[in-house]
Image 1: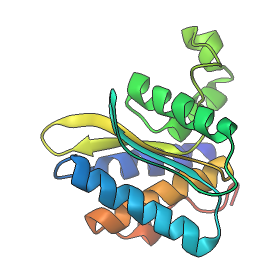
Image 2: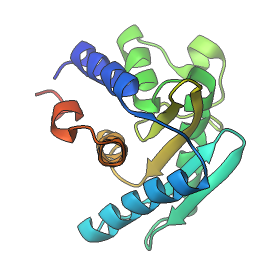
Image 3: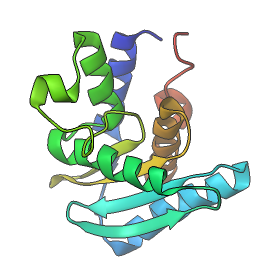
Image 4: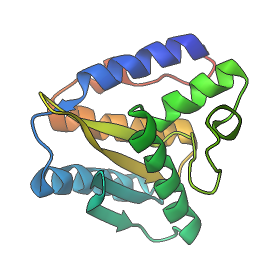
Length: 167
C-alpha cells in the first residue's frame, strides 16, 4: 500500500469505527480488550483510553518504560488537536515533506505524529476522546487499536486493516 492508499484507508476507518457512546464501561471494555490481546500475543504496551481531559482506562504491561507513557501522551495530543488518527497526521505531514514543528509550531516534547492514537467518535456527538497504545512499531500500534475497535463495534478488521507497509 502506498501513502495515498493508506491515508484513504485510515479515513475509511475513521468514518466506520464509531461508538454508540463513550463512558467508563465502554472505555473499560475497549482497554481491557487491547490488554487481553497484548497479553495473549506477548506484546509490551501502554494503553490509554480517554475522553479529552479525562482518563478512563490506563494499563502499562510488564516491560514498558516511562518513554512509552510519554509517547502515549504526545500521540493523544495529536488526536485532540487535529481530530484525526496520529498515524494519518504523520503520513500527511510526510507526504507534504514537513513536520508538526515546521507546519504548526508544535513542540516535539508535546506532540508526536506516530501511529497508535485513534479518535473515539461517538455517533451524533463527534470526536470526544482517543485510544492510544505505545510499544510496537507505529503501523502495528495503529492496526492493534483498529483491530480492537473493529471487535467492539462489529466491523470486519480484515477489510479495514492497513496491509504491510509498502505492499
